[in-house]
Length: 278
Ligand code: C2E
Ligand code: CA
Ligand code: CA
Image (cartoon, rainbow, N blue to C red; front, side, top):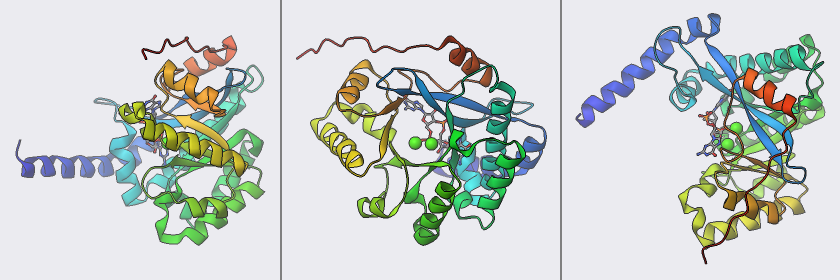
């Protein structure tokens, strides 16, 4: 396939996604999956991230990396983020009497968090379902909000004053800046999963992660390591006093039926001992 063919294919894909998105939301083709977060102290589930999936009525599932960037460009992401929040609130309502549901975090794109009426719309959804804001967390990516950092800081303050937890997602990726971390009143730092890619083996990336965890503690932030895929990484993070882990090593994102079953089992996770080859 030539470069031109590839570009044409990407363009057609984008058009197709834009053309189908409104019907898709009306037909409830979007589902929310849940990926558990594990508390390193009790090794139990302390939360979960809500991750959207698109199962078209016809054709193969479409993954977020394909459609989220398109929705971020055309503005439909706000509708989708609020749809996910609404679904999460419904999940609480349907299950809170039978399950001890931990805090659930919902992603808010840069476009969504800067939208004029986003706080009113979030409040309305949460109030309609009568959900305690303490049960909800919003994951925000500050590096994506270069256009209006003042408004971003203001929105974090507003979410916090309403009782929601706020986390800074993908920390360490792109342009996330250290001095801005002093200004933002967030509760949680989520280390970008790239830290735990193949490059993890390197002493340099280990030193950076150790320093970031230490820094977060000094400014009273909790730390979630995302993308934890091996026992070696998990043990190392636990020794470092990192608070929580999220990743395929413990559990992949799963549908609400599987997530409910996992909660019901009250599973205590364990990390296999790793024998160092050195
Ligand atoms: P994210 O917010 O950084 O979410 C974590 C992504 O890492 C998820 O990909 C998850 O499935 C994946 N992941 C989990 N454990 C591991 C692991 O051990 N190793 C690796 N390599 N990856 C792991 P997913 O679900 O495909 O979502 C991709 C991105 O799409 C998310 O990245 C987020 O930026 C966006 N996204 C997903 N759902 C929503 C949503 O409802 N609203 C918005 N605005 N964005 C969303
Ligand atoms: Ca996230
Ligand atoms: Ca992330």
